[in-house]
Image 1: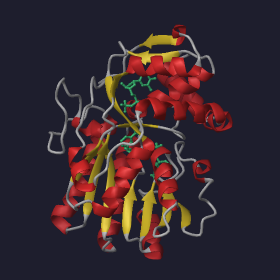
Image 2: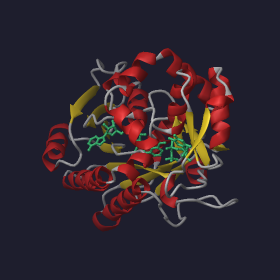
Image 3: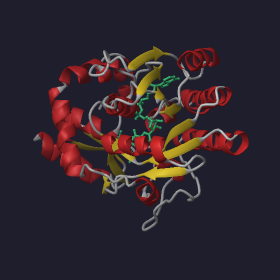
Image 4: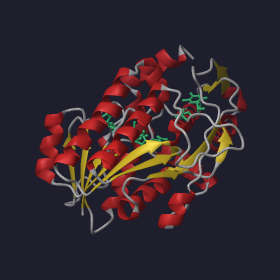
Amino acid sequence: MKLLVTGGAGFIGSAFVRLVAGRADLDVVNVDALTYAGNLENLASVASSPRYRFVKADITSFDDIEKVFSEEKPDAVVHFAAESHVDRSILMPDAFVRTNVFGTFTLLEAAKRHKTARFVHVSTDEVYGSLDEPHEADENYPLKPSSPYSASKAGSDLLALSYYTTFKLPVLVTRASNNYGPCQFPEKLIPLMISNALEGKPLPIYGDGMQVRDWLFVDDHCRGILSLVEKGRPGEVYNIGGSRSLPNIEVVKRIIAATGQTDKLMTYVTDRPGHDRRYALTSEKLEKETGWKTLVPFEEGLAETVKWYRENTDWVSRVKSGEYKTYYTRNYGDR
Ligand code: NAD
Ligand code: TYD
């Protein structure tokens, strides 16, 4: 089977490509525009595989995408490419609408024209919005996105599902909780805190730091997606959660301990506008239908992640040079 993976140079997409590159029955074509978040270094271990091919292309370009589909004739699309960071969506929402909504539309149209046998649209639990205790979202929970990021993902989820209902395109939607692991761009909570802690820099905590997220190790997420490529039912939505809810402050304290730093680095900063208080979801449907379960406990995954950032300081300094500095100052001021 040939998979067309979009956004395979990003954090989760590259973990997925590394996972499937080990499978003798799968060929992979990775389509990525290499934005600030795309990094081919993440794919060094698979770059020379005869079953892997990289195509630099923008998912918002009909011409680029038509060319890839005509040349590659993929059996399935696994669509990761997106603008993925909430804080950036507050500062510059236009790219989110363009890539996440229009880019998904372009891919759906190509898949429809080429009668692609499966289209897995990778989405997020953030589309459900903030949930009060003790509620957990299942796949029928109402959508109530808060940020331009989550609203653009909710829009693309609905568009993708409409292609199943209207055109019988075999679309599946996955909604995962917060991922962490190696190769994550240091703008999201865990990699930002690890990288700042390793450099002895302040750890910026939004508001009171009591917001709750459900943490999922990236390889567990990727195994969940692969199980749905193989066994998921078209037209369905599947949650993929880590079953490990923690307040941000607790995550930061664990990172401080793991990096040998002190609590003095914790710096409370102005809260993010529209900040969701709590995400919570159940993955029972995925577990029941595919037998998937998480394999990596948070303690183990966090230790592995800290180790990776310690051992890959060149990767970190390369991605932190250039545009990152402008973004960091814009979002956090001079802290
Ligand atoms: P990321 O920001 O690390 O990577 C995104 C990738 O998409 C990059 O390689 C980038 O170059 C590529 N890209 C962006 N715009 C493109 C365009 N116009 N054309 C082609 N490629 C383009 O993102 P991530 O954290 O790996 O997230 C991947 C997917 O998973 C996203 O759809 C995101 O919404 C979803 N998701 C992420 C999380 C999380 O915690 N990070 C959780 C649930 C779901
Ligand atoms: P993030 O990793 O941006 O994921 P999301 O907002 O998509 O869930 O943030 C996770 C949590 O950490 C969220 O409650 C916001 C908080 N946070 C901080 O307190 N400080 C930071 O510098 C960042 C990036 C996030």
